[in-house]
Structure formats: structure tokens, C-alpha cells
Length: 396
Image (cartoon, rainbow, N blue to C red; front, side, top):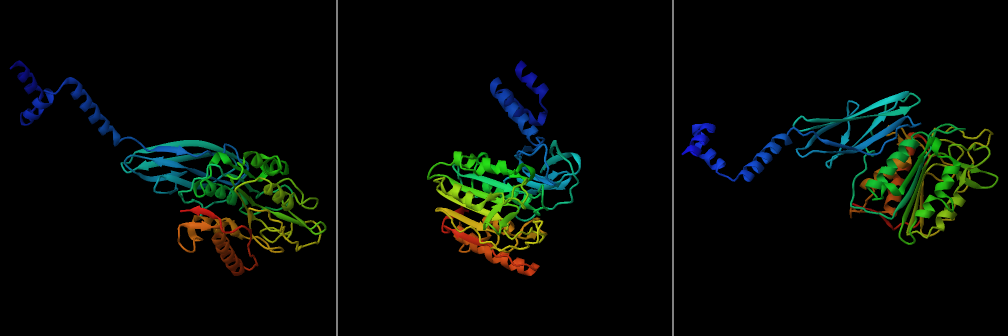
């Protein structure tokens, strides 16, 4: 009777039976149920979790991508980067391109869930020049696929700002986004992707990465690794030697063609890799993307045949034929060639809709679209596909 009286003092009359039943439970069970109840009450107040991808603390580029993932048990409503909505996919991955002004740039990433709980991460990026407003293109967020290529190795090079010649417009954007496609769409491990841009893309660095005893040669597994090399920037011809080369940041094209295609292809041909795919968003006309001459003398446009010695099992997809320029797509802030490469890798080039993208399908898609768009904008540009073409690049 005494126990019942104590229980009655703690319970309202209309809940007496329920309360008596609850107080009759073993003490350990009551403690457990109370803990669960408290956790449930707190769950609605738990903010989202923000996981940021690696980003530069210092950069010599005029903009950068902020990428990461937001998770929340109740659901993510919005992700804001410096007060502007970021692109967010169903799995919580997000991306935003931000401009970087002179000096210290404060970056804020805020995520809000459906219950109004807000999480925020802040950091800074240092930049030394003013940057114009940037927008996110439709290809800047690569699709996730079921590809898994743990043995793949890749080198990505983007040189927009040069020491001796004019800029290669949007080459930095091209390289940054292509790297994300390698990881998310082609299934490469980020630790197996090396990227160098602008002032870091010196001739010495290119040789360290792509030379006979370079990083890529040391990381290839015989008959197992799929190798990708991507270059966006200026290409240079030499009328006397008939050589063509990829122009690094620190090379004067009036004295050198930089890294010759002949040497590059020869090195890649000795890797004993499962496959080698080279993407070249450059031209070898002696002109830049804005049709400006890169050379001091009056040679103008020099028609130098592209290197045709493609070792097996190599594939080369290049932005233009000899004598043509590789132009920009200003409304997308990418090179015209790279834009359609990215769009094709994202699935647009899968012409037979079999959820598999072959090199041949990608090449045909890029060739037809680039040629059409270039003609509409007033120049001739026809990409070329050389080498093995029936290999599957992506499975969706």
C-alpha cells in the first residue's frame, strides 16, 4: 500500500495505470527507456555534418571550387557557400565555385536541415589578385557512377596563366573539373591523381610526373593500370624541326616547344599499362584560344602535322587538327573541347543508351559538337581521335 501511495503521488489520476506499469519495470529497463527517450528528443536538434574535400590554403588562381558532403538523419535542406546556394546532389555532395579577391578570403560553408538546425565551417584562402564573378556550369558537378578503378593512375595539367605568353582562357577550370570526373565518374582514387596548375606546371615538374622515371611510370602496375594524361593549355609547333610540344608555365615558345609529343608518347608507350588515354585541350597553330599569336616573329599560323606515332594500347583525343585553334566556350567558362569531353563522360555521349561509354562514342560526340559550335562562333575546330577506340571508359 505504501508503494502504491508513493506512485500515486507522482502520477496524475488519468495516467495512474500507465504510471504504475512503468514504475513496476526493473530499474535498469526504466533507465534505458529514459535514455532512449532523451536521445530521440535531442535528435531533432542535431545539426547536419559537413565534410569538406581538401582545398588549397594558398593559390595563384583566380577562383576555386569548394566541394564536400553534408549528411543529416532528418534530411538536408540547403547548403550555402559564402551566402550563395551551392549545387547539392541527392547523396549530399555539393560544389560551388567562388571568386577570390586580393589577400585573405574568408570562406563560410553553412548547411541547414529540414528542422532548421544549422552547421557551419569557416576557413580562409589566400589570393594575390582580384577575381571576376564566376558561375557554375552544367558540367562542373560530375555524376557518380559504379566505376571503381583502384589501379588507375592519372596526371592532370592545366596552365592558364603563363610566364612568357598570354593566358590560355579557362585552362585552370578545365583541369580542376576534369580531376573530379576522374574520381567520381571514372572511379580513380584521388591519391592516384596528380594535378599541377599554372605556376606549378613548370617543365621540370612535367618531367617529374611524365618523364621516363617519373611519378606515373613508378605507379603503373603492369597490364593492370589504366593511365590517363590530361593537358589544357598552349601547344607549340616548330616549323624547322616539325616537332610539336605542350607548353609549360616557364618556357618561352620562341626558344623551345616545351615537352614534345614525340617524347611524351614514347614514354607512355613503355609503361606496359592496361590502357593509356591522352586528352589534349590545346592546339599547335602558334595561336592561343583567343586567336592571339604566341610567337614573337611573323610565322603566324604554322601547319605542323600532329604526332602520328601512337603506340599501342594508347588513345589520343585532341582538341583540333593541325593549323586550327582550340577555342573557349565563354558562357560555360571552359575550353570548348573540354566542355564536351566532360558532358560526354557524364553520359551525353552514350549514343546507344547501353549504360556503357566507349572511346569511340566519346570521340564521335566530341567531334560533332565541337565542330558545330566552333563554326557557329566563327572558327574551324575539329577534334581528332587516334588509336584504340572500342575500349569502355565508363559504366553508368
